[in-house]
Amino acid sequence: MERPDARVLATIVVVAAALVVGVLLADARGLVPVSRSVPVVAAMAVVLGVVAVRGVEDLGVGLLLLAALTATWNGLSGVGLSVAQPALAGALVVLAAVAVATGRRIHVPGWVWVLPAVLVLVAVLAWYFPPSPGYLATRTLVPVPDSVATATPPFALANVVNLVRWLVSAAALPVAACLAIAARPRLAPLLAITAALGAAVNAAVAITDELGLTAISARLVPIVDVGGRQAGLSIQPNHVALAVAVAVPVVTWRNLVAPTLARRLAWLVVGTVLAGGLVTSASRAGLISAVLGAGLTVLALRAGRRLVLPLVGGVVAVAVVAVAAFPALLDRVAEQLRLSGADSADESNAIREGIARQALADVEHSPLHGLGLPVAADAHNVYLQLLASGGVLLLLGFGVFVLGFVLEVRRLGDVGDGLPRVLLVSVVSWLLVGAVVNQLTDAFLYLPVAIVAGLAAARARTVGGPA
Figure 1 (cartoon, one colour):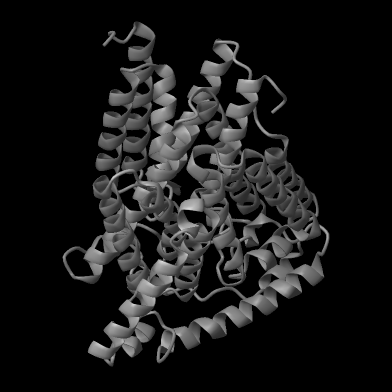
Figure 2 (cartoon, helix red, strand yellow):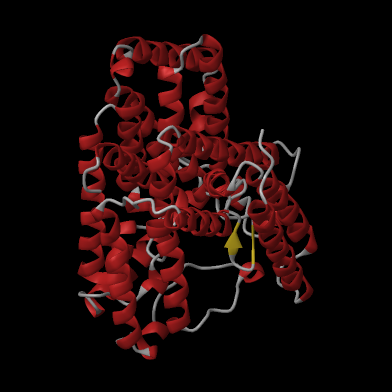
C-alpha cells in the first residue's frame, strides 16, 4: 500500500483538529456533555484516520458511508446536529473538491434539483410574508412534557434552520451520492446495505433497552419508553419504527439474492433484529409499512416472485401453529403493537386528529406558499405538512421530485440485482404511511432517492450522455 502524501496527512490534521476544538469549545459552553463529545470526537478521528490513508477521495466516500450508517441515529446528537449531518457535509465538500480539482464532470439528474429549489422559494416567501404573530399564538401544537420542553426559536430563525436541515437531506445527500457513485457504481449497494445495518443497530439498542440490559435511550433522549415503547438511538419510538420499515426492503432483497446459505442466514438474523426493534417501538404505522415493504419487495424481484406461494404458505403455517400452541399470543402481540387495548393508542389518535385540523387551518390561512418550514413536522401527516409549510407550491414540487425518482428507477431497470426497484419500495412504504407519520426531512428517508440518483449519474458518465 502506498504511503499517504502530505496533502492527505494535512487534511486529516486540519479536519480532526477542527472537530476536536469545535466540540470541546461547545462542551466548555455547556452545549454538549463530555459524555457525548469525547466518544463522538474519538469515533470521527478514527474514521477519518482509517479512510484518509487511502486517499482524499476515499475520505469523502468514508464520510458518506458514515452518514448512511448513522442516518437513523438522530437521538445521538449535540448542539442540534446528529452524527450523520457533519459527516454528510464533510463528504460533500471533499467529493466536490476532488471533482473540481480533477476536472471531472459532475452528473446530477435534473429532477434532483426540483425539491431543493421549491424549498428555497417557499422559505423566501415565508421570510418576506410571514404569518401574523396572532395566528401563530393560536395554533394547536403537539403536547410536550415539561421535562423536555425547550425554548421555541423565533419563527424567521426556525424557517432558516429547517430549510438548511431539509436541504441537507434533499440536496446535499443526493449530490454527494452522485459524486461518489458516478466513479464507483459498486458503492450503491454498499450504501443501501450500510444504512440497513445502521437501522439494525438502532433496533438492537431498542431491544436491549426493552430487556433491561441497557438504558441507552433514557440517557440520550428524555422522552423515551412512553407507554412501554422504546426509541433506540432515535429521538422517538415512531422514528426507530420507520427506520426499520425503510430498511426492510433492503434486508428482504439481500435474503433473496444472497449467493450462499450462510449469507442468507446472516441477513435473516438482521431481519429478526429489525422485527424485534419494531415490536419494542409499538408503532402501528411502522408495522404496516414493514409488512408492506417486505411483500412489495418479494413481488418486485424475479427471485422473489418464484417464492410467493411457498412464503405465503410458510407464514400461514407458522401463524396457525403459533396461535394453536399459544392461544393468547395473538392478543399479546396486538396489545404490544397497540392494535388493541392500549390507552396510549387512543391518546395518540386524539392528538393526531387535533393537529390534523390545525394543519387544515394552516392551509386555509396560506394556501399558496404555506406558513413556512417551521411547521413541517407538526401534523403527523406528511401531505398535510407539505401543504401547511409550503402550500400548493411545495406539494407540487415534492410530487415532481418523487415522479422524477420513479421514472429514473424505470430507466435503470434491473441494475444491481434489481436494487433500484428495492429502493423504490422503500420510498413507497414511507409515502403510503405518510398519512400517519410526521417524518419528512430525515436524511435516511432520502437515501434511497440519493442512491438512485447516483446510479443515474454513473450511467450518464459511462455512456457520455446528459445527466
